[in-house]
Image 1 (cartoon, rainbow, N blue to C red):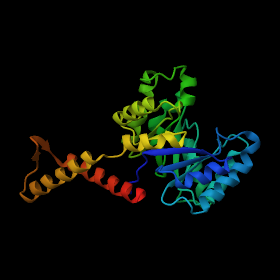
Image 2: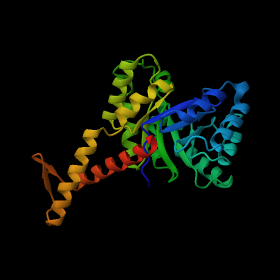
Image 3: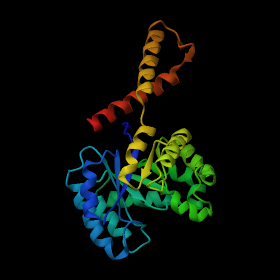
Length: 288
């Protein structure tokens, strides 16, 4: 599987053509063009046409383009999926996933609609979804990412949005664990206060510490903080290079371990260093 940075993943309402156009120049790694929560019922059909036109335009460079559809049980979901399958989107994002069967059903429909190569992202937004996250994460090889929907989850769990996010920690960690067990990326939920720069940086750092690959965002002003928190900094890049240097020397000498600054370096450290450098290279291409 190719490495793809997903430090910053920005939701964009499909009904807002100006916002879709602005997103072409934003430094987000990925965009979720939304047909669900951000779109009023009366605008669903037009929003669908807007996002398909946007992703087919080729105007977004190397950004990863994902379309969040309405649930298949709604009156719009089936047509959403059919339209996305016929587009150039990289993935379809499924809201409120609670069972492995939901993912498999969408995969079968994508095959039927001629989109056998399209990836699937699954949103975990309900207690039932959290409790079934391991089954969901292992449901289908087309599944590429788990996405935390902490706004809906807060309502369902009846927990407040506190700075330490204490009420979410069990759910967040369960999803990280399931993602890692099945080789998926996992994205943290949104920070709702767009004027709270300090709080945003805190939850980004917390998410990184918990093991998330990136953060979903609701405003362009949040992109920079997510890119910094979830991307390797120069110190991490330099250390990764040094790890690979001493590891290469150890391998050539027939040793199974090496030392760097008095600390043991083993195969797992070399593998992680290679991953960090690979991500750094792709980020440099995106930002170049």
